[in-house]
Amino acid sequence: MAAVAEQDLTTLSLEHLPTDPLLLILSFLDYKDLMSCCFVSRRLNQLSVHDPLWKRHCKKYWLLSDVQEDDLDAVEAQIGCKLPDDYRCSFRIHNGQKLVVPGLMGSMALSNHYRSEDLLDIDTAAGGFQQRLGLKQCLPLTFCIHTGLSQYMALESVEGRIKYEIFYQCPDQMARNPSAIDMFITGNSYLEWFTSYVNNVITGGYPIIRDQIFRYVHEKDCVAKTGDITVSVSTSFLPELSSVHPPHYFFTYRIRIEMSKDALPEKACQLDSRYWRITNAKGDVEEVQGPGVVGEFPIISPGRVYEYTSCTTFPTTSGYMEGYYTFHCLYYKDKYFNVTIPRFHMVCPTFKVSIARMILYYELTYYE
Image 1 (tube, rainbow, N blue to C red):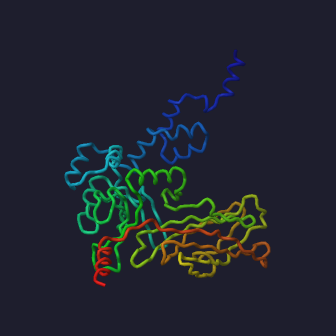
Image 2 (cartoon, helix red, strand yellow):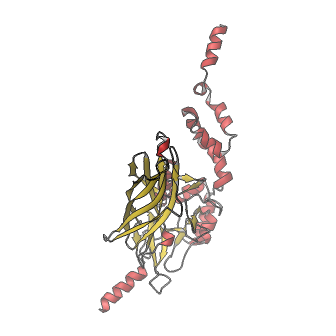
Image 3 (cartoon, one colour):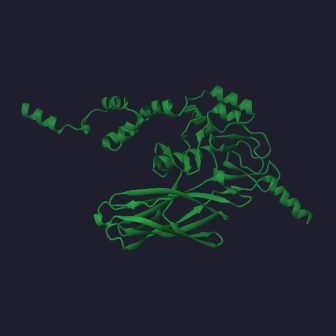
């Protein structure tokens, strides 16, 4: 009997422990430790995604407590518009977040620019409800305290918008009319907009860097391998630095350069220069060549990864870039070679021209 008991103890593992005690242990962990548990074993991965474990962390670090039906009814009476059912349902579960950094709805960082969007609580959103021309009957969903950028939801079909579609406002810089506001569309309903974003986060579509969610999009085919070095690219559109009138579309891209951990030590090398071939939607080509990347000359060795972020603009709604880096070997200093940068495309979201500009266009056409 003693031998059997000893054998049972030696084969005991996490897979055999009951669920409730393990969940109790996990409930004492900080959210960062809880995330780490996901990578320990399949059993802990399954338990670590248990919703009640995260509800406490959400309330503590990110989301405010839910609101009641009476509160939502009061907001509807205050703004004079009906809130969509999917929006009401969401805020019965949570009430957005405080104006903090980083925001839950994505960040973007360049050398001289930073954006981080908070998901607004219902009272702040109601306080920012718009009745002015150009944004009439629009409710803000997000807000960035650094740039003043918001995503709005149209609560009525007015000024060329479809009811409940979601967009970034983009002032028409060529019009002498403050109501001339173009729109970059980000969703057709609150449910589609929110679930699409969440899906990108939980599937790894949006990378989490230093505890911030970055809305970079990576195409699976956007990878190039030269010898032991792999280069991959992800991109993002910045609406706050773009405009439809005049046409100026701003994109940022994040590049990852990695040498295989199995490469020989003598394959270590240093980046000397870059070459870009940039093509817009009209077929116009610009070539750029210069030393290093973002002022640096990174050394790449087996297993090492180097990442950097840069940006570009197009006068068209889309374009693409491709090129190569020139490296020299550290062990054989007179040996140089090129590393391919894969072609990557950048496309701005669907946009709508302001109703004020459309009226002006029709008037000019009529009088001609």
